[in-house]
Length: 294
Image 1 (tube, rainbow, N blue to C red):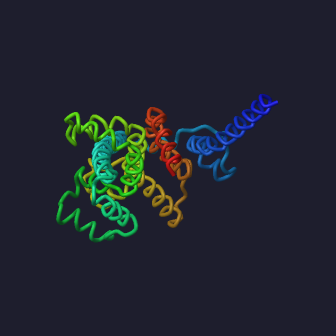
Image 2 (spheres, helix red, strand yellow):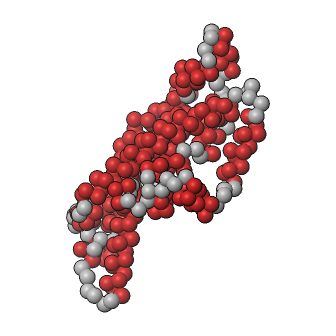
Image 3 (cartoon, one colour):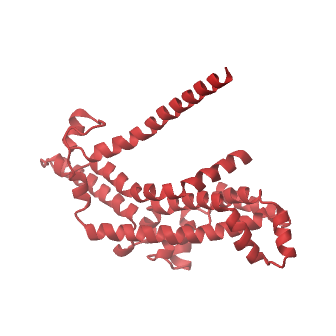
């Protein structure tokens, strides 16, 4: 009887997650379908899972300047890779110091980190700091440094590192290991799930950012992908609105709007979707550890 109940319970669980997975996949299918549809079909028939007529107009429009697109991808990949590695290393070091129970200032510094989540100095002082005092505008540093240390990532990593027994650190000290050796040889290898989880969060922040580029970047060779796609979308909307207000007849199939939005979403999310499966195991484990701890 128990075996039969267990089989039925498993089937119900599998069915539930299958239905849930389908609901999660459907929006992505819609995005792909819309990006491959004619603008006139969307205006006449609305959205559909299968395009009424297949076309690559949106992608052809976005790929009119392949050199600019390659530059955008290159800048975004460099900023994301360097920023994630630097941020992850500094976040892990700060989190490790705050997680040490033998560190007297741990609670005060943890509160200070948490306090910065609630209140910030504001946009204007931040802009003046980057532009006038640090003078790193129009450079890669302007796209990397502002996100190097983020309070939420520090507290998330601290929660994981707090579970590492202090006895491991003490035994390593008895064997003659210094703080740096303990951190790199013991703490970091034990923190792979947390590093993968926080690393992905950091990578998402860098990859999806266009705000810093809009504020600090004028050099066309330093414009990341997200900001480049943002400007393309704004140009499409501006041209469409201007031509309509001037009573100029335009062919909407030659000026994609909704289809371009979806094509931009695919081009922006593609690399992250490609990288995620390689870190999925550690990412899920890190989230599970955090859930069990909570």
